[in-house]
Image (cartoon, rainbow, N blue to C red):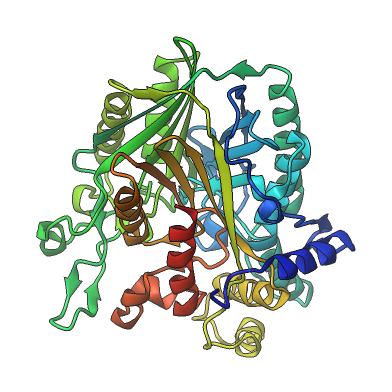
Amino acid sequence: MSPNFVSRRDLLGHALVGSAGATLSGGFSWNLVAATLEVPDPTGSANLSIATFGFDVTPPIGHPCCGGWIKPVEVIDDALEAKGIVLLGAGKPIVLCAVDWTGILNEAHVAWRVALAEAAGTTPDRVAIHCVHQHNAPFACTDAEGIIAEQVASGRKLSPILDLDYFRRCLDKGRAAVRKALRQTVSVSHIGWGSAKVDRVASNRRVSRDNSGKVLAMRGSACKDAKLCALPEGLIDPMLRTIAFFDREKKVASCHFYAVHPMSFYADGRVTSDFAGLARKARQDQEPDCHHIYFTGCAGNIAAGKYNDGSKQARIDLTKRLHEALVASEAKLEKTDPRGIVWNTEAMIPTGRANPTPKALAMLIGDKDKASQNPNRLALELAFHRRCQKKIPIVLGSLRIGPVRTLHLPAESFVEYQLDAHAFAQSKRADAFVATAAYGDGGPWYIPTPEEFPNGGYEVSVAFADSSFAKAMKLGIESLL
């Protein structure tokens, strides 16, 4: 067993610490009595039912965007949503939820899982919370907000990271939405799955390299550098995958999965769900009786830069192309009954990179003369180090229904994790269909593959976990699949 994995004894220890009254920054209590201690029912249930829920998570005017280092909210162009499903009849309820936020990190992520678990009558490890990762949106880390609040209390003029009252209100909305949904469950007779190739949206950011493989320049979410745009797409996953839940002929919910940074342009103070959210909303308008949810896959090194110059027209074009793929992925769905449904998890203790140390980070955050330093980003990294010291695990999850697998991963994972997972699953079962959601627990921020750490580049420079965590995650994925 890798030292990063949590044994049953260790996980029970963490659970007891949680139940003894550990609290999140801002007074949120957490309890990680996780069902990784349970043995999943290998037969599943033929009596599966589903509840769908959604609620508004649009931030108020003036709220920080993207952790406080871009312009705060000035205008709401379109609402931000949290959308999810609750599956019942396969042991304790399973909750899958996608949120139109930049990220939910560390104890804030635990708080979301606990809140929805309490409402659904399940345990936090059976709740998968993911962010779509738009940037004109909140970046929720209660731990880091506490670090910045201490600096503000000492007289510093720093942008906050998160409004804790707003965060609490969102949790309350989530509890209420799940409880309401559970009063309106629908039977699931079949599961459907399908895929479609997405045209001219995703491209790899790390395509400019020297002969040794080191990254020289990055093609970001938007790119106007003609030379960078002319380079090939690079390694991507071009397929959008959909898993749908049916009550006989009625399609009740569709979960869509695609790997790309979902931004066309941002940092203008205008809140929007951007092209991924807009495509999802267009699909929802087409099918108001089906609950459509969009999950961003492993897009840590994937963006729209090759096909996006950051213009308003580019947002329109990207939305149209993604919407076309959403429709196409559902055109011919294969189906199976829901017998044999299983939810599995792997819990891992993250390890922070060696430099900078927590002490050095604290000193940098407190240094008023270091104007070039971004204290908010440093606070996020320090919060992750403290999380590692507390041994709060990161939980990977996977739902299995016949040949269908979902894979639920943390943070800004590189696309290689997704592609390797699909290949691994198909090596075990030729007809395996894997749909991957990343941007779960955002504590580690970027998660390059172990092989990419020596090649540098922006993503490696802001990877808070070390390469041993990346290696453990690859093993965890294989174990789940």
